[in-house]
Amino acid sequence: MFDGVLSKLAKSRRVTRINLPGFGRSTPVQLDSVGAHADHVARVMGALELPRDTDVFGNGFGAFVALELAKMIVRDGEGVTRFITLHIHGGRTAGDAEAVARSVGNSTLVKTSWFGGDPNWGRILCAIGYSQAKVDESKVDVGYSQPKSTKIAFAVRRGQPTRVGLQTLGAIVAKPEFDLHIFLNAGRHDCVLYTSDLTEEYVEFNKGDLSDPTSLGG
Image (cartoon, rainbow, N blue to C red; front, side, top):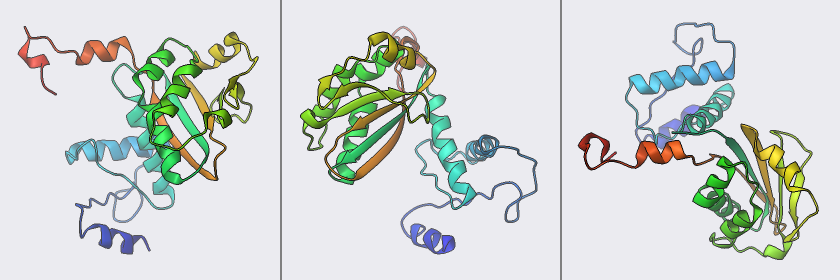
Protein backbone atom coordinates (compact mmCIF):
# COMPACT_ATOMS: atom_id res chain seq x y z
CA MET A 1 0.00 0.00 0.00
CA PHE A 2 2.75 2.44 0.97
CA ASP A 3 4.68 1.73 -2.24
CA GLY A 4 1.57 2.55 -4.23
CA VAL A 5 1.23 5.93 -2.56
CA LEU A 6 4.89 6.78 -3.19
CA SER A 7 4.69 5.89 -6.88
CA LYS A 8 1.73 8.24 -7.33
CA LEU A 9 3.47 11.05 -5.46
CA ALA A 10 6.59 10.60 -7.56
CA LYS A 11 4.64 11.65 -10.66
CA SER A 12 4.41 15.24 -9.39
CA ARG A 13 6.88 15.51 -6.50
CA ARG A 14 10.48 14.72 -5.76
CA VAL A 15 10.28 11.79 -3.33
CA THR A 16 13.12 10.91 -0.95
CA ARG A 17 12.55 7.67 0.91
CA ILE A 18 14.43 7.37 4.21
CA ASN A 19 14.62 4.02 5.97
CA LEU A 20 14.55 4.30 9.73
CA PRO A 21 17.48 2.60 11.51
CA GLY A 22 16.92 -1.16 11.48
CA PHE A 23 14.30 -1.02 8.73
CA GLY A 24 14.75 -1.90 5.05
CA ARG A 25 18.42 -1.92 4.06
CA SER A 26 19.56 0.53 6.72
CA THR A 27 22.29 -0.29 9.20
CA PRO A 28 20.80 -1.19 12.62
CA VAL A 29 21.30 1.62 15.13
CA GLN A 30 20.11 1.50 18.74
CA LEU A 31 17.57 4.32 19.17
CA ASP A 32 15.33 4.12 22.22
CA SER A 33 12.59 6.66 21.54
CA VAL A 34 10.43 8.21 18.84
CA GLY A 35 12.27 11.49 19.44
CA ALA A 36 15.64 9.83 18.80
CA HIS A 37 14.36 8.49 15.49
CA ALA A 38 13.07 11.96 14.60
CA ASP A 39 16.51 13.41 15.38
CA HIS A 40 18.02 10.81 13.06
CA VAL A 41 15.64 11.74 10.22
CA ALA A 42 16.40 15.44 10.76
CA ARG A 43 20.13 14.76 10.45
CA VAL A 44 19.60 12.76 7.26
CA MET A 45 17.44 15.54 5.80
CA GLY A 46 20.18 18.04 6.65
CA ALA A 47 22.85 15.87 5.03
CA LEU A 48 20.71 15.61 1.89
CA GLU A 49 20.13 19.39 2.00
CA LEU A 50 16.38 18.95 1.79
CA PRO A 51 14.52 22.29 2.15
CA ARG A 52 12.86 23.20 5.45
CA ASP A 53 9.40 23.16 3.86
CA THR A 54 9.75 19.51 2.82
CA ASP A 55 6.56 17.51 3.43
CA VAL A 56 7.29 14.51 5.67
CA PHE A 57 4.99 11.55 6.17
CA GLY A 58 5.31 7.95 7.25
CA ASN A 59 3.47 4.67 7.56
CA GLY A 60 3.06 2.82 10.85
CA PHE A 61 5.87 3.72 13.24
CA GLY A 62 7.18 6.15 10.64
CA ALA A 63 4.02 8.22 11.05
CA PHE A 64 4.82 8.75 14.74
CA VAL A 65 8.33 9.81 13.76
CA ALA A 66 6.98 12.27 11.18
CA LEU A 67 4.65 13.78 13.80
CA GLU A 68 7.50 14.13 16.31
CA LEU A 69 9.62 15.80 13.63
CA ALA A 70 6.85 18.35 13.05
CA LYS A 71 6.80 19.15 16.77
CA MET A 72 10.60 19.50 16.81
CA ILE A 73 10.42 22.12 14.04
CA VAL A 74 8.04 24.23 16.16
CA ARG A 75 10.10 23.83 19.34
CA ASP A 76 13.32 24.75 17.52
CA GLY A 77 11.89 28.05 16.23
CA GLU A 78 13.89 31.21 16.87
CA GLY A 79 13.35 32.44 20.42
CA VAL A 80 10.53 29.99 21.21
CA THR A 81 9.77 29.64 24.93
CA ARG A 82 6.34 27.99 24.78
CA PHE A 83 4.96 25.08 22.72
CA ILE A 84 1.20 25.06 22.24
CA THR A 85 -1.02 22.28 20.93
CA LEU A 86 -4.11 23.94 19.46
CA HIS A 87 -7.24 21.78 19.31
CA ILE A 88 -10.18 22.92 17.21
CA HIS A 89 -13.36 20.98 17.97
CA GLY A 90 -16.67 20.93 16.11
CA GLY A 91 -15.97 22.88 12.94
CA ARG A 92 -18.75 23.15 10.36
CA THR A 93 -16.36 21.76 7.75
CA ALA A 94 -12.77 20.48 7.80
CA GLY A 95 -11.77 23.68 6.00
CA ASP A 96 -13.39 25.84 8.68
CA ALA A 97 -11.61 23.96 11.47
CA GLU A 98 -8.25 24.40 9.75
CA ALA A 99 -8.92 28.06 8.95
CA VAL A 100 -9.60 28.83 12.61
CA ALA A 101 -6.53 26.89 13.72
CA ARG A 102 -4.23 28.75 11.34
CA SER A 103 -5.76 32.13 12.10
CA VAL A 104 -5.26 31.71 15.86
CA GLY A 105 -1.94 29.88 15.59
CA ASN A 106 -0.45 32.54 13.28
CA SER A 107 -1.83 35.60 15.07
CA THR A 108 0.99 37.90 16.18
CA LEU A 109 -1.13 39.34 19.00
CA VAL A 110 -2.11 35.89 20.30
CA LYS A 111 1.45 34.58 20.12
CA THR A 112 2.92 37.61 21.92
CA SER A 113 0.30 37.31 24.68
CA TRP A 114 1.41 33.70 25.23
CA PHE A 115 5.01 34.89 25.56
CA GLY A 116 3.85 37.14 28.39
CA GLY A 117 1.92 34.31 30.05
CA ASP A 118 -1.35 36.11 29.26
CA PRO A 119 -4.35 33.84 28.48
CA ASN A 120 -5.88 36.63 26.40
CA TRP A 121 -9.11 35.07 25.15
CA GLY A 122 -10.21 38.37 23.57
CA ARG A 123 -7.39 38.15 21.04
CA ILE A 124 -8.28 34.52 20.37
CA LEU A 125 -11.91 35.41 19.64
CA CYS A 126 -10.71 38.22 17.39
CA ALA A 127 -8.50 35.81 15.43
CA ILE A 128 -11.43 33.39 15.09
CA GLY A 129 -13.59 36.24 13.83
CA TYR A 130 -11.25 37.34 11.03
CA SER A 131 -10.57 33.78 9.86
CA GLN A 132 -12.25 32.60 6.65
CA ALA A 133 -14.42 30.18 8.62
CA LYS A 134 -18.13 30.62 9.13
CA VAL A 135 -18.43 30.84 12.91
CA ASP A 136 -21.16 31.91 15.31
CA GLU A 137 -19.14 33.46 18.15
CA SER A 138 -22.13 33.14 20.49
CA LYS A 139 -21.55 29.36 20.39
CA VAL A 140 -17.76 29.36 20.87
CA ASP A 141 -16.02 27.93 23.95
CA VAL A 142 -12.33 28.64 24.67
CA GLY A 143 -10.29 26.85 27.33
CA TYR A 144 -6.76 25.94 28.39
CA SER A 145 -5.36 22.72 29.82
CA GLN A 146 -2.14 20.99 30.72
CA PRO A 147 -0.69 18.96 27.81
CA LYS A 148 -2.94 16.00 26.93
CA SER A 149 -5.17 16.65 29.95
CA THR A 150 -8.95 16.30 29.71
CA LYS A 151 -9.40 18.84 32.52
CA ILE A 152 -10.04 22.12 30.72
CA ALA A 153 -10.21 25.52 32.41
CA PHE A 154 -12.69 27.46 30.29
CA ALA A 155 -12.15 31.18 29.81
CA VAL A 156 -15.15 31.53 27.49
CA ARG A 157 -18.43 29.62 27.28
CA ARG A 158 -20.91 30.34 24.50
CA GLY A 159 -19.05 33.51 23.60
CA GLN A 160 -19.12 34.91 27.14
CA PRO A 161 -16.37 35.07 29.78
CA THR A 162 -16.60 32.55 32.60
CA ARG A 163 -15.85 33.03 36.27
CA VAL A 164 -12.59 31.08 36.06
CA GLY A 165 -9.96 33.36 37.58
CA LEU A 166 -7.18 34.95 35.56
CA GLN A 167 -4.61 33.44 37.94
CA THR A 168 -5.92 29.94 37.22
CA LEU A 169 -5.69 30.46 33.46
CA GLY A 170 -2.37 32.25 33.75
CA ALA A 171 -0.84 29.38 35.72
CA ILE A 172 -1.47 27.11 32.73
CA VAL A 173 -0.20 29.54 30.09
CA ALA A 174 2.94 30.23 32.12
CA LYS A 175 4.12 26.65 31.54
CA PRO A 176 6.55 25.79 28.69
CA GLU A 177 3.85 23.57 27.15
CA PHE A 178 0.07 23.73 27.26
CA ASP A 179 -3.02 22.97 25.17
CA LEU A 180 -5.57 25.45 23.85
CA HIS A 181 -9.07 24.14 23.12
CA ILE A 182 -11.53 25.98 20.89
CA PHE A 183 -15.01 24.47 20.56
CA LEU A 184 -16.84 25.97 17.58
CA ASN A 185 -19.97 23.88 18.22
CA ALA A 186 -20.89 24.10 14.54
CA GLY A 187 -20.30 20.56 13.26
CA ARG A 188 -18.22 17.41 13.61
CA HIS A 189 -14.86 18.43 12.12
CA ASP A 190 -11.74 18.76 14.27
CA CYS A 191 -8.19 19.98 13.67
CA VAL A 192 -4.91 19.95 15.61
CA LEU A 193 -2.14 22.49 14.99
CA TYR A 194 1.21 22.92 16.75
CA THR A 195 2.34 26.49 17.32
CA SER A 196 4.48 28.62 19.63
CA ASP A 197 4.80 32.00 21.25
CA LEU A 198 6.47 35.03 19.60
CA THR A 199 9.28 36.56 21.61
CA GLU A 200 11.60 39.56 21.73
CA GLU A 201 14.46 37.23 20.80
CA TYR A 202 12.70 36.38 17.54
CA VAL A 203 12.37 40.07 16.67
CA GLU A 204 15.98 40.77 17.62
CA PHE A 205 17.19 37.87 15.49
CA ASN A 206 15.16 38.84 12.41
CA LYS A 207 15.01 42.66 12.45
CA GLY A 208 18.11 43.25 10.29
CA ASP A 209 20.58 46.14 10.51
CA LEU A 210 21.39 48.41 7.55
CA SER A 211 24.88 48.95 8.92
CA ASP A 212 25.48 45.20 8.75
CA PRO A 213 24.56 43.87 5.25
CA THR A 214 25.08 40.28 6.40
CA SER A 215 21.98 40.63 8.63
CA LEU A 216 19.71 41.55 5.74
CA GLY A 217 17.71 39.24 3.47
CA GLY A 218 17.03 35.71 4.72
